[in-house]
Length: 363
Image (cartoon, rainbow, N blue to C red; front, side, top):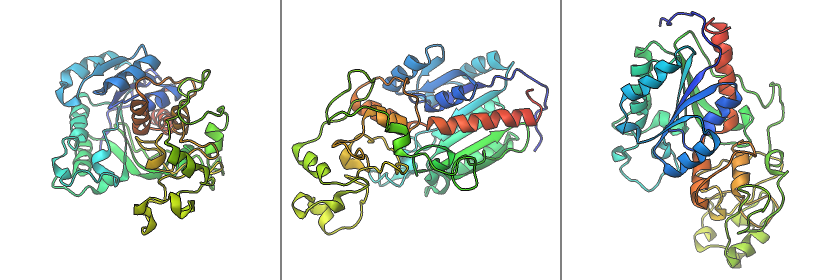
């Protein structure tokens, strides 16, 4: 594939964040020294959070399927003195193993969203592309194969592409969760950034739960700390308070006495993470949109008798403490669970800048 030339441009990369949500990718790219110019999402509460933290970014509150490429092209044209990065982290729910509610996923109207993102790439031809999603996107079993089609369309636009499933903890995020990450460039061969944490890396130890939430003051279930924004935990029933009190650090419902067990757990060994506590000195297993619900995963605080708070969930997604979340409690949890981990985007952003320097696009 041929690149588009290497005439030198302004060093600052302009970021266009599609499916931006509350701004995890934008926050990471900003930390990498990039300039976020444009964001698009259809979630009104996510927009509230985004604009509270990025008041100067143009935010388009719309369904991407209702936006014309010409509208985005106007913003891209204004940014062309610098390299342009398109970030497209489409909703992952149709492709995740946790989706058990839709028997006919081929009819899910979110599936074509990645290909709608490809429409904007074809029309605007950004210098760089970043995609983050669940690994199941690669192997989606449907008459539609959005990821394969997406790769084909990148190839037709002369992008160099690399992608694979990665463990977040290998990039400094305190979660063992796997994610699919894709990077693409019009200017030359590109690979995913080298791992930053783990054996044979600059940081041999993985980041842990303690590293990221150990500094926060204690609160009880249902409480909000008066001095720490968003440090608010969901209420627990009296029965679940009993259950979490007998759950050791790193334990789960398997550690309960018989009298406290749910019937569905007594004769079934699965669901080992539900009603679980995190371990202080290990990464979390992975945050979801229900990351503050004790009954929906290993979201119990390591030693306080409650699920993790909104602020703690945000910390485990590597948001900075000053990042403010807006909306109802469950909405904020959903925003955090859907977000691209900030540190992952920061690592990728710095790698993109190094790549542009290596190929002579920026100095």
